Image 1 (tube, rainbow, N blue to C red):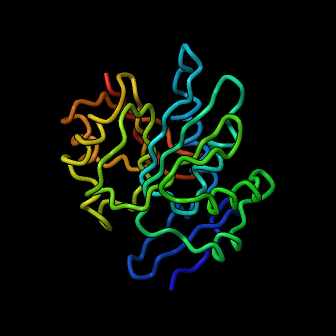
Image 2: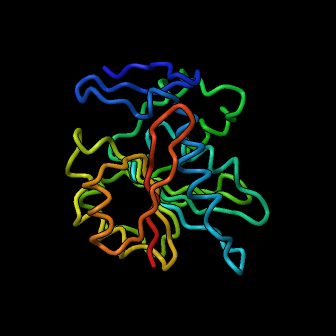
Length: 219
């Protein structure tokens, strides 16, 4: 049975015993989400000239932490259509037991989990959520994606999620100038991203966490 654990920054994550894997970094779940996905991807991407929502594709909805910090960062000039792929949704009871501290709107987090699956759902004026319960390795990806949050379990735990073929599918689904961020900076993963056409940056990792992360940009 999955368990809740408290990470080094005081925020919670979920531990999956049969994979011996955590949903977030044990060095700081909230810190990781804010740095890698909100700051290095969503807030980094240029605002569209017509102020149209940025189309975000998340690989792995999980606890909803990446989605909620993104929703909280939307405002008049920065809106999002957030599409998340998740094969095994987390039970609502477990979500209610998570603790992300005062910085997270826990009511908003719960509303993301209670939103219907399979259809776009307007959470706020500037944030639309579209949750798709599907297998990333098999399902058809949406197009015109501006940002990809690649937050799958680690390559040594789920190697099938990190193949060059799947990175090519993501690349083809993205708009020019689109960016992908991931916590994994392994050399083999960086080379696979480069092989399909991404321009790679190695960025400093989150405070107290990984030394480096990757940001990949489609030319």
